Length: 242
Image (cartoon, rainbow, N blue to C red; front, side, top):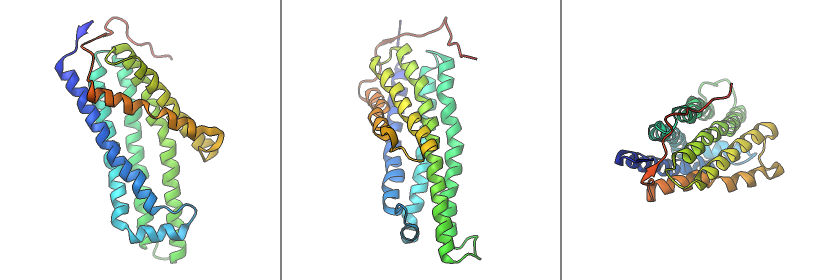
């Protein structure tokens, strides 16, 4: 057992601040904006909404890029915090987040392409109806991609949960909640790819109940901080299965 440096407590709280900031940005970009833009199974209404609310649509794209970058920053801060506990698990925590970063940035190109298509760039030879249909197709491709990318958002929570358990920074219950949170994201992503919908087999309902793990953990970091003492694994490194 050893005393936790004040710098670690500060890092934990800063990571929590980044998390709750990105939640606000992501809620606007991935929640509010689509609710005002996307008319499910209505190509014409969706196209009209995009053209009538172009600034809002562009703001949604920017918010998604910012929130994805913030997620990466947060996890790198957590890596700095947990590396002394187990460097191998800490690296495993970072890898899925680094993988999803370029994927999300690439998927946002579909959003930009959908707007360009509606405005006749570069499909000048298509009539407006054809541009509407192509734009809606690009939006659907973006949606499918984001649904599948949730797999990586779930995978990083498994090593994070294990690090919480080994570190003793906060109560062990949070390690269980984080792993359940990861299972929820992975299950939803797999169902989305295989079934094209998470409504089957109550997958969405199950996933929603697991999503409290990360918010509660970061709230503890922000309000309570870290325990005065923690366990540091220095003699037995994590064995990664081959």
